[in-house]
Length: 595
Image 1 (cartoon, rainbow, N blue to C red):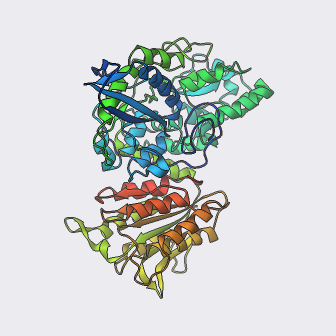
Image 2 (tube, rainbow, N blue to C red; image 1 turned 90 degrees about the vertical axis):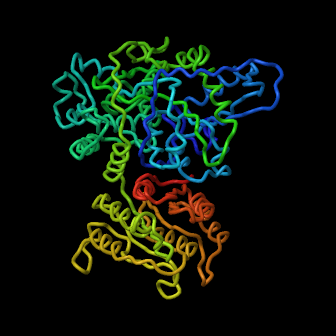
Image 3 (cartoon, rainbow, N blue to C red; image 1 turned 180 degrees about the horizontal axis):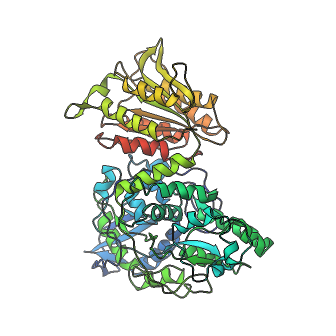
């Protein structure tokens, strides 16, 4: 454990080393109404009661410790509902990881106890998770906020002072960087305006900043023209860091040297207001100031989501979860959150929210439009495609069962091919990608066959076309045949990417299948495959294998084991209609590293 949190945990909290590889999924959302909803739960305080209902609350790590403290106080009141004792267990769970894990069959061995309540850092993470129809059905209609922290641009105080009355909004980041004399015009000799961006796939502040920049007209949608702002943000990014906590660690080291070192580090970076407050409470030489863009921003609003009929089943969740919510939203909860630099559901801050701590006690709070699910999905995919160097082998199941009809005359294979073509079209020209297919006996005794070898998409091939063009053409020609030689294919695909490993790239296998291993020629069994994957995971050049189960007949248990042992997670598309988004999540939602 690092900082008292499990290896699965990651957040935008202060302090602690970053985790190497988080995961996230791309979104389609049910509208979550976050804000000052009042949830009333009548529960009696009793010393004796019959039975017990316990709810597991999976909460963002930066607020989990406060919920644990509240839980201890709540337990002392001996709460009960209709004569039944109620309690909760608070688990610190990374918001980005949960967005992915809720969409897949829950693995209690790897992920811990299945949640009854989810408290992500922001409602945007919930919209992210709702890409999956499974998650959409679980999300409640109401999402009361436990606490709030506005997303801001953190800036050294000296530079913030130089802004004077200048209006600084989200588009200003790119505009300021484009003007090499921007700071000189404001009386500062610190060179060009530079921005340190955090990874929006894992950083709450980074995600909220990206979406505010992308949705320039604040209508909740992001069209092709607005996506150009994402490219401009990338061009203005001079430092790309995993999380706000990592930036604050680097700024603190610079501050230990001199004020000039802090100014040289950069002009600004994404943060939550609470991050700025907590940093300044340590009284650095050069404090930070929270800049509140006048067009508004998306908050870390910590929605309390009591999951509705999750697939793993629960009876205690709604009862115990609602009872704890009433306490957490009451006087004890409000007092605790305010004391730690958060605002309440109405945007009112406590005593730490002061100018001395870099915050603005009162400001013209302007909430932004509710994001459309497609806006979040497309924006995150665009960001990943333009910022990440990728070395990826795409492996598609072409066994006979892929002929099965999903809807109308459309087969699983038709949907998979369309999704694969769309994914290939999104890669950057410099990405290294290859295409394999598998069933059984495709290439002599081998169950797999290379259709397009791994290499840069911009490479010219022997037929005069680019690799990208050849991949798209090869995908469109695929015809289902044979059985499913899954295990041998996984081992060979991982070995292939390892043989072409790129040190500073995301090295990955993404495999889509609708079945289970039924190779008539024998080959590897699951236990031997898992041994190989675990050994590779323990090495210095591991290649994670993202598995995607397509359809209800996929062997999700084995796929989950394969992905887990290789250092990642499995995804699922049980009805097939969302396979395009799921495949994009598998390809563009991953970072290198271990689980």
